[in-house]
Image 1 (spheres, one colour):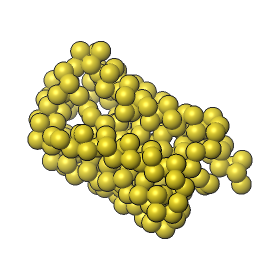
Image 2: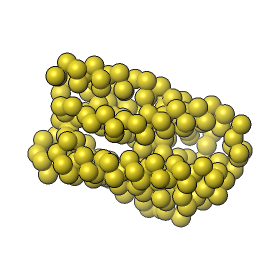
Image 3: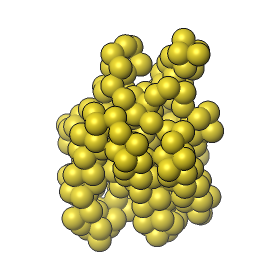
Image 4: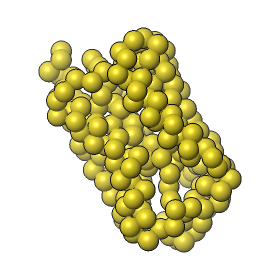
Length: 211
């Protein structure tokens, strides 16, 4: 049982989206930049992609969880701490050269592309189809579920071996957010529940083959 109603949940997004505008458009621009930089395969581009992803996690932890979602759910402060920690871990992994990105055709990479496309394009369209007003939608790059989906997508485009610890918080949120989506009637988040179950085995199998 959740400590808030679907209406209260949607109201939080409405208030959040109004206050942070036009951060949503900046997030889309950064997401596009990350995909372009991913193709360059240089140490600087790898760091830039990692820092963009890190910024999305830290922003979402502080701006969404701590400042808005906490109004209706006290657990949001814990979620905020986890998101900020994940952002720090991603940044550290990128700066140390342990997190690198490159397009290498295969099932993992194509699944990653599909998750990125879903997070950025299909996610809001499904929300609109389900009857949510645009202003009340969880938006790409600045809210937990699209950020998690985008992260799994980019992780599936990483090389050669992804640091295992980077999977913990996204996998946890895929279970928390995906399960809550059923109760909250948020159909665009239903894929979130399966995203970890798809991405993690694919990453493990891919990395084992590369070893």
